[in-house]
Length: 376
Image (cartoon, rainbow, N blue to C red; front, side):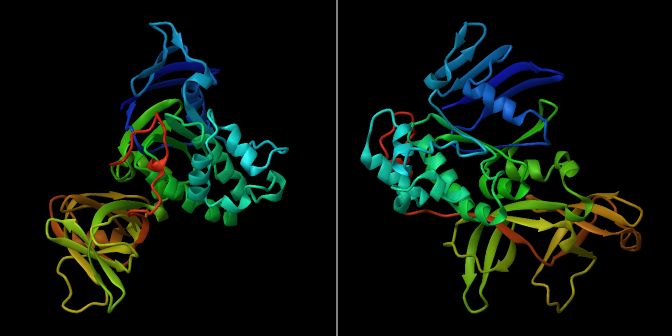
């Protein structure tokens, strides 16, 4: 299944001009500054706005094509849309709101969705009696019960306070793993993006300036504009090689005979892990110390060294198949005589796990949905 979005649309002084081929499952995050055109783009996909020209294809269904004079109405595109606000019907119960999304009433599907989103105990309540996070879970459930070919989520956490965001995010994480349809997720939050997205589209002034796997885009120069000098980081994706229960540590396999120890990760061996390492948490040495409290000291090759201000340098490093970035003082850079091509050792003092992919017990593919590609 393909997802093609090739459109142009003038919106005042902004020109939306994209040519995207997205993956057929998982989460693609649209990221960029306010006014970059993210919400406008998904509104074009949903049919809420009409492109000036272009073509939108979801799977084998052409929903918009100016050359062939095709422009399906929003309700015929089989797209679920979750807005910033829940937009629930206040006079319907949770069960009634969920049923509203179903083309064919099916209590089993409603039960599976309610269980997936943890709202089984809320079915007889009205929206006014729900928290903001609970309302958004109901809105997501209503969108899923419409049996969509794809799901659009426009900053679903933006209107929530921090406690409600923390309440809802794990459900969206599980949803992203269980639903076998493409999800386009608009967000201003880098943390949300790291936890949820498989692919990333970086937008600026209506145009796509980078598109690809999250780690590839995150580690590219294109992302530096969105990361303050004191918060520059890289993303490593690796599998868990082993656990040390004695020391409550987990070992990640970075390939090329490189490993990285982290605090214990509650996931089976071979699970895929996404780890964020800040440049400020990496120091460089020419020879590894014989004894050190730092557990992760790995060989690296210098790719480049660039001053970021009067006192600091950003050193980009190659560690096997992965890139690292170290923020060090210009004094240290001059003393070490850092040059491209040299081999050094990176001392990694810390990192945070932003995502781990492991099998969940309740597969969404248990639902009967003609627009889903089921898991085997």
